[in-house]
Length: 309
Image 1 (cartoon, rainbow, N blue to C red):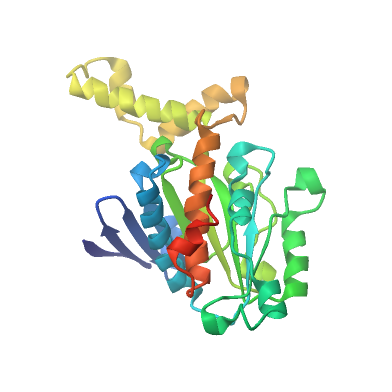
Image 2: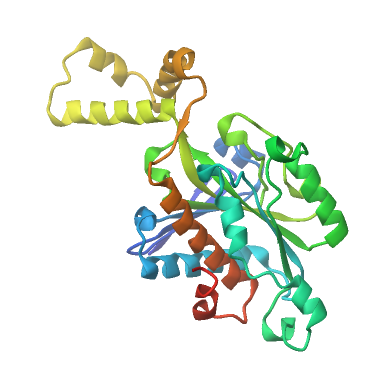
């Protein structure tokens, strides 16, 4: 099932199956940028409510769908070199998604150069290299500067960046995969905006892949309040002045109000599910499976799956 919708400067297409809902958004001009608060580019979101579950069949289905979306965005000859960057801190579980994905990538740039008779673009094997550069607190170097140095040396035709994100919705934690061709600013989701990894900064097209793994405390409280209001309505108990006051506030106003109340006590507190180690393991397999399929058209999912153990 597919559908198309237009708003000024924005093209939206949706596709739904039993397990996966895919939304494709193309921002084509400044009107679209103002409407959505994002730079011009192509944005894809895969929503998979059961992504948190360890279901091998679902992992395969999501990986294949992710691969198809990435193939469309990559749009390069198989001879072109791709550099994959796993952002994040491998010592902090909710932030370790990028390095975990890189661990399971099929890296081939050295093999294509050294053993061309066995590993060749003619066989659908792309030269792929990967890096998990760590974070500023570990290296003392801006992550963007590390990547830029590698890009100048390796000269890839494309960069793919994987990162854990902060969400503004509880239900999106570990259930959505977000892709864009507009790059990424590490740490921006938790108020720690660093040097951007974008085509303008790197001189190479950048595709960003992210999965929400944390949410701030104000969002938790705001979502709880929304559910409380819904419960008031369900039980037909909307008479109190407190309830009437809440009704006049939109979602963003409720969020900002709660954030102001909580800040003196918890600061910029972020939270993550208690089973985050298991979720990161499962999601990293899903992302690396999709990346391997998209980057190496000559490799089947059965072959890719051996790297996901």
